[in-house]
Length: 57
Image (cartoon, rainbow, N blue to C red; front, top):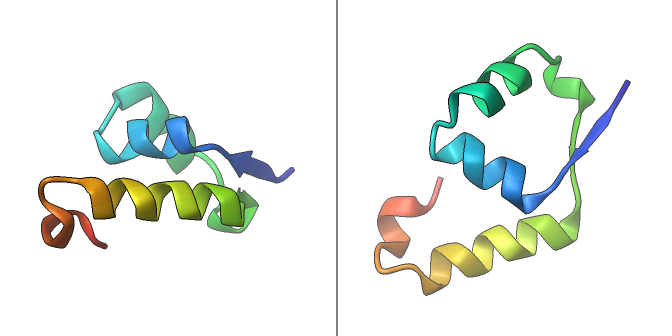
């Protein structure tokens, strides 16, 4: 089963929220999907951040 991740879930994972991290780790990477809209939201958040260079992956 595939899961389309939203921005809130990804931000929680980046911040290390234990329940979210554990849930994502229990899934196969091939089952995790990301929309172009979510990617755009994450990029915008990095650009508008006080530490854009630090946050870029």
